[in-house]
Image 1 (cartoon, rainbow, N blue to C red):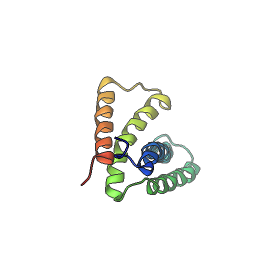
Image 2 (tube, rainbow, N blue to C red; image 1 turned 90 degrees about the horizontal axis):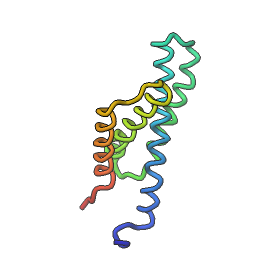
Image 3 (cartoon, rainbow, N blue to C red; image 1 turned 180 degrees about the vertical axis):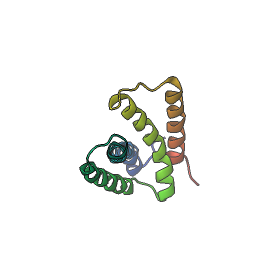
Image 4 (cartoon, rainbow, N blue to C red; image 1 turned 180 degrees about the horizontal axis):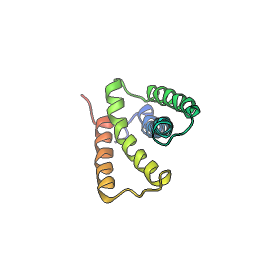
Amino acid sequence: MRDVFSHATQASIVLTPVLYLAAALAEIAGCFAFWAWWRLDKAPLWLLPGVFSLVLFAWLLTLVDSDYAGRAYAAYGGVYIVTSLLWLWLVEQRLPDRWDVIGAAICLLGAGIILWGPRG
């Protein structure tokens, strides 16, 4: 089994979820800044950190070890969904329901298959 995973792949398996989590937090924070400005009547200054966060999000996704952008983005989607539900719970103080949790688990499984499934 050791031959199946190279050192680079092992590093990728550790680093990729960290990059995806950081990207998700940056994207959600950036989008929330726009949400707060538009929907919660916050000052337009909220847009500045929002734009910065969205640029950071895009840059972080470029660091993921993937040969194709579309595959990296598809796998990221699962992490984004889970992180969004954590945001719902921790920031917006609304507990995700069981359907949120089941859906997020299915998405994470799919993201893992997309990202680390054998290619040949």
